[in-house]
Image (cartoon, rainbow over all chains, first blue to last red; front, side):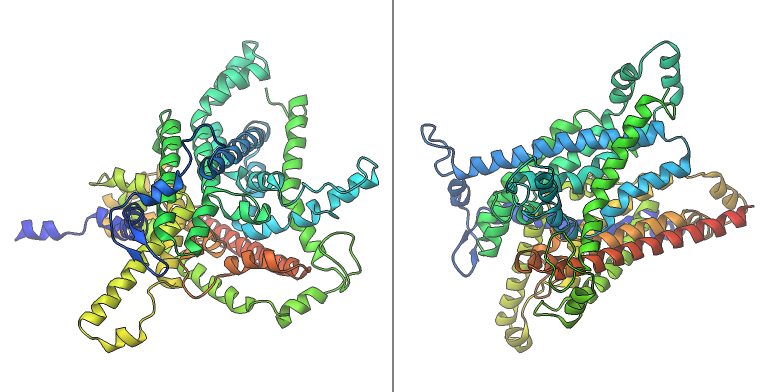
Length: 295
Length: 293
């Protein structure tokens, strides 16, 4: 009897059940369904259970004729990877510099917290509005064009400031640099300050300390931040849509458009490929670190 | 090393100031421009100074029903916030001890954070669509009139929409809980146990009060991330639209400062909410340090 009671005694692990349930219903099952439906057939009204490869064949149609131009799919992937790379480099440079300042040059904790919050607060406001807020600055008659004309640097307004690759990357850096700052700052705060003092006393310059101590010890933070930024840009369709004036292509936008036309199995096939590429990128990056140790 | 006042200090200080300007400059430019005069346009210079565009917004001015979208987002944000807090705190407590599947659950949570939003949105949309078809098939099989005539869809704000947002807010909640418990001083808990408290009493009377300020932090993430969420929920809100979805639609159709007025109001609202959370955090920390001393 006591044994039976013990068996039913509430365990702490049960507390994780509702949490796990949400991820099972809204993450695990949907991903499996996406894979399954990517092999289904469809017509104008409905999706039809099947096992066909047409959805994938259609995506790569003409992609392996190497005498011709690049196919749409490869072009789109290349342009998405290009956005990823540029955004990654910029967010890394900016994020690292900001974190470096906060972690090493700001000496008192209240100031550190205050400056950190300055970086974080925009993350809790609307992304769409943050994108829209570039219009008065970048537009044809925006502040930047007007200033440049006033200074006599240019005669006619620069058109490529807004609704262009430039504005997309600017907005991506604007929105996602925080994803770099937080993990890198976290890594930096764990560095034992006496190591740095020791190196300094031994005659190392700031550059040497940066490249030989701080950057290697920040590797986990850099990797985590990079994973966030790269995955968010890989699947992006909102920023590229709004800041690209709905003119630029991305994988996310292809999936979004196919969904709007109810070509769900086609969208699913594209989603599976996007997912595979994302997973490859993440696995390559996580080879270096154990995320759980970094919290 | 890293002395205040050194050349490096000024270099990175200026860099930080420029970064802050980059973060907030655009935001303040639309706040300023939302007070454009009636003749004013989307860019500087200011053409007079008025509340004209806020008035237009108030009257609706042919714009979609922003008021009810706002109320919907507010309600959804509140529900997501409560669920995020309750579920993440519960899971955080569970994760303090090893249990079967803990590693898998943790990896799933992290995966959910970094899965491309559009993929998840598509998956959930497919899931609920297939669920709809199953229900319809079931209804026809057993000739249940209520289903045959009335049933539309299971997709909706508080079904698929809420669940999808939780896959975005819960990972933040769990990560905060991990960060809290990694720094948690276990001696308070052990003292309680030594005094004869049961496990649940210890949690209720000792652990939860100590981590209360962090729980406020989870709430902040839960509410604001839901209130502004767009990419994941874009395909799964069913017939209704949340505020971010309406805002995205407006970016392509509205060409007057009315969108700035709207942006100003939502941004100030976000600031107010963030301020409230900070106030709650501060009050809680203060009352706790009083208890301790």
